[in-house]
Length: 139
Image: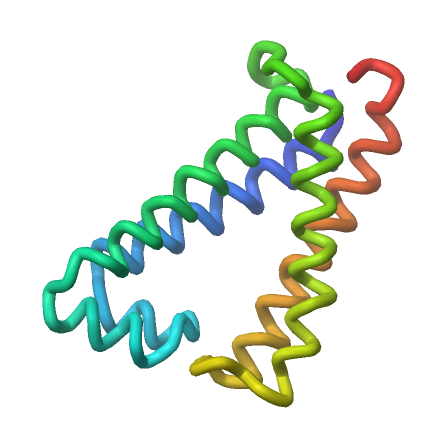
């Protein structure tokens, strides 16, 4: 079992759960996690758009979690494992690096949101990289 990929799967799963929290608990959670006032206001007004956007993110993060667990040997082998994990890792890395660009023009979010979310994405990317490096020959 590859513990780095288990941790990577857990981190993506935790991110998915936090997004579910935003759907369930609404505007205060959107605000707390820095989703922006526009998303929080739409949630307060009962609009469906924040729920749809956040639900898509939940599905993607959950799928990423499953791929990490699959590569770690916890669940059965998923299709296109190597390619999927390369893409997932690259997305976390690119998102982590790109977020620092938005600190100076935050697009409706706080600079702190961009810094913290970027650091988190970079940590998850590095855990994936280490796990992938260890597991590469069996993928």
